[in-house]
Length: 401
Ligand code: SAH
Ligand code: SF4
Image (cartoon, rainbow, N blue to C red; front, side, top):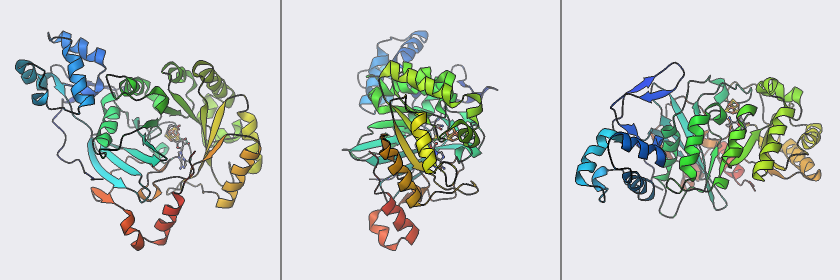
């Protein structure tokens, strides 16, 4: 696949007005970013500008079906309307800073979000699926102890067009025969801390006039902001919950949010989600050496989730500098996995992908790295790889489902 660093791709955009509450609004009389809009939004906007509303449908078809964003090429629009479009709509996407490709096929893109801030999206191929993991915030205030993103306080919540834009940038670089089949909100940030932009993005993603991806292919992962979890059920998308502790005591130790909403409240919200959607919940459980990885913890975990139809996704801790935690040995990981299976749990062991490009869970950072703009670590170069990279390749013989 061609790797493109995305330079010089962005059109000029409206100056932004950063208000105290992190909400960014376009200044008056400046073009609105198309990717921030639903079909209804665009109709209302065009109406306000004295334009015909049916043009909205035509523009959506050009952009999401044909990937045409140059108004001059939107041939079914009148000449006059085409000429006026740049004044009212911009099709700017977040600028791509780097695009890295791992030995295991995982790709990572770093996006410029302005003011020295950046976020990442990761594309993960597996068994006929192409899953895109996207970010919802720059940094994160939930401050889970083991998470690299959580080390950086929340800088700002992303806007809809910045989340949709991550999808479009990756989509635009796929080969003819490739398409993104699944989207997970498991990148940087806590999606339920930014619900407005996240659920508007979801509307754009699943609607036939938008990206047109089934709701069942969209997963929102949360650390457990219980009062906002109803939104996931209402949107009828899949729910993943970062559990990461087998009981309240350990969960509070690694995820301080558990003091605010404990496992009883969290699991009640999960049961409610199942009642409404009939979809199993995915529990993510990070294995931290000596803290969450004991056989006793596996037993407590199964007990804890016994009333919630679910699968458990075990994620061996991905190490990052200064975390203070360690990844358990392969033997411990296997024993934990085996115990869950012995107890009848539906369990997945996630062999983290993309570790060589620092794209695995919890390794995402918003720092702009001192790296080349585009890098391809292809199989042909494997022979010359250092031992640790070859091991990572072996590690990518994952068994996700
Ligand atoms: N904020 C959301 C989504 C992003 S985090 C949430 O917490 O659910 C995505 C997943 O990565 C979470 O399940 C989290 O538990 C896991 N994770 C975070 N840091 C990790 C690390 N260092 N190693 C392995 N998994 C990690
Ligand atoms: Fe935020 Fe999720 Fe990381 Fe916790 S695990 S700090 S909620 S990104």
